[in-house]
Amino acid sequence: MAWIEHLYVDADALAASLAARLEDIVREAIAARGHAMLALAGGRTPFPAYRALAACALDWHKVVLMPTDERCVAHDHPACNLREMRAAFAPAAGVRFASLTADDGDPERSLAQARTLLSQHAGAFDAVVLGMGNDAHTASLFPGAEHLAEALDMAKPVDAFRIDPRPLPAEAPFPRITLSAARLLHARSIHLTITGEGKHAVLREAQATHDPLRHPIAAILHAPVTVLIHWSE
Ligand SMILES: O=C1O[C@H](COP(=O)(O)O)[C@@H](O)[C@H](O)[C@H]1O
Image (cartoon, rainbow, N blue to C red; front, side, top):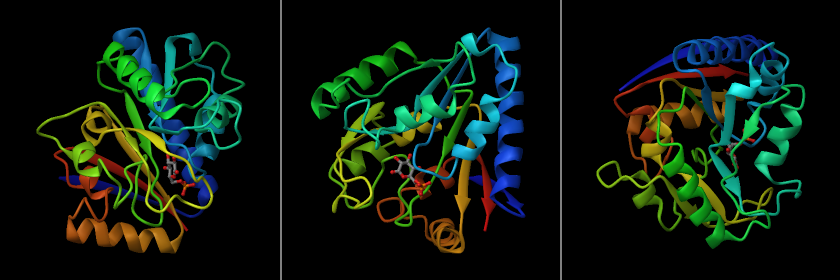
């Protein structure tokens, strides 16, 4: 268990710094293995970093981007994480996207698609970028959800799960497909983006108490990996 905290003066500084790190990671991955694969959180917090990264001159056709989790909605729905990602990375000509969900968002077909996709991309992610909700969920590992314990289980790892948050969050009231904790941790680098005092307090509690069923982010923080925490007010 280890985490390194980077505190930034504001969200713009966080975005610039994270984008620069991801740029280096992509360059190094392409130099070492010929391609790069990133798993990226949806929501709002990391998107300024994605837009800054998308402006970098990289061999984008050698890069695959996958959401860490997806809402079970049609791909043209405003709540679709991949739709937002495609818009943010529009300047990154040639970049490829890997979808966790079926085109129409059907949850069961999406789960089958996600598991097949992940079996085809079995290698470690070069970087995983995570966010965290006010309830300490990360990706779509929501406290209180059915299947959460299985999705956190490191002894019997399965790549992806359907999670139906209870209650459904008002801002995105949909079933989700999420990478499991084990799959998120199968990464060469892990970055957690946090903004705001409220989330900072939740993070501190998750660091101190180590109860992943209550604070799913704790499954990442207390794993035997180094997590880079990028935080600003
Ligand atoms: O629903 C989600 O929420 C979390 C946190 O989002 P934020 O808007 O508070 O940054 C996000 O990390 C996750 O990928 C997303 O599906």
